[in-house]
Image 1 (cartoon, rainbow, N blue to C red):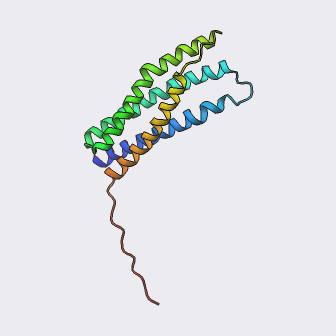
Image 2: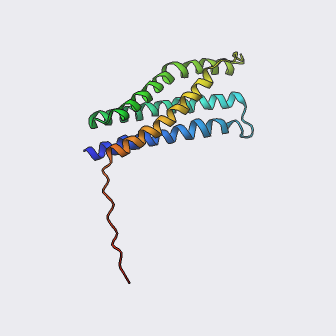
Image 3: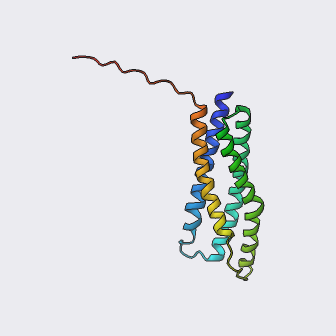
Length: 157
């Protein structure tokens, strides 16, 4: 059971990292370079994609925290998970709803005044990605038993 939970913890963090990297830092900026994609259409697609990503992130975060709880992970892994959970809570309950209000205004033809929330979301995603990679790596090395290298026997010719 311990091996399965260790695998679930590490895999959930690396899968989560891959999703954040692929969507936040690849798909989101690239969609606006596609032909015939207007800002309104890009914003509409972005809302759908980021809300779906957020739901998957909540599931992966829950899986990682539950696995870590059963495994009684080292403190530094637990700290990473706690920080990831905090960032995800801030994005879910503050930044995504605030950006939704701005997107609705834009889609209804009222350009909202510039503010810092979109930049803050990007910074939070960058920090989250670094934390995911670091926490997953720490968890891997803390939970994966690795054998000592087998000494090589050299044959003399």
